[in-house]
Image (cartoon, rainbow, N blue to C red; front, side, top):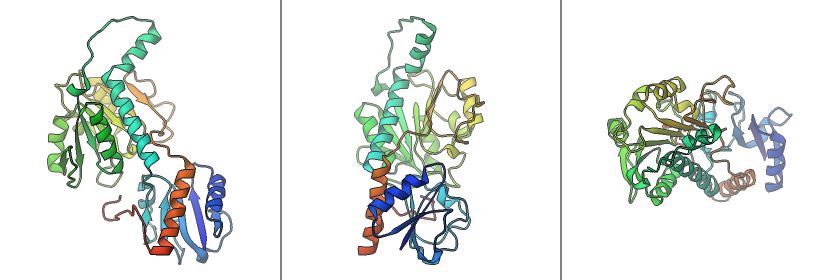
Length: 314
């Protein structure tokens, strides 16, 4: 049985070597080299070329190398087999670290003080709102969103969550569906986006959504933290909202085009923190072990964890 590695943007040879070591009884090949398409039972992918997985008659499962699967589900010729995504404690912890870091940075006005440091300006402003005065709203209550919400709560923030479908989470105020979205936004000073990218969520973070955020919070305006997917946001609307005061600041780890083009005004905006889509980079060895364990569990017990529901795209 062959494992096909179909990725772009990463070192494919490293992944072939890693999976060959973890699955010594399998042949592991990279897309682009010769292989018998009839012998491929599993595909490991990240942003494979559309249509590249068609014509694999014995394919049993597809594994994403990340938590996101929009790069897979958008393939119009995707084979009708289970798609599994990565759910890894290390990845989850790293995402929560990022979210808490940036929530605290905006709470304690770190971008402002870094600007003052660069300009050698000493402004002794003693006012600092407490975390308990600030309402954080987490959009997306999957594994990543729930963990981030809990850790933000531990820091003292007043946290609520929103998801497309109803979720009951002990100790967390939750909102669900389009009908509750603007009630959720109206009580939110810091908006954290950890939603998956689907046809329903593409472009969701637009001018209308940003205008719905709370205007009476202690930070002097609402803040956006997007560590989900770049396709969720309309960057022209974010920039316009920053310019007219609808939005005070933003931390963005993901973008409509990646890498972020050098001429993007987001790079130099004084109230935007840009990070290079590295909020939750789990160690490749940990991901490789998870995939190898999934293949063994599937063959021994017919079990696959974290399978995507194709009807909703995550």
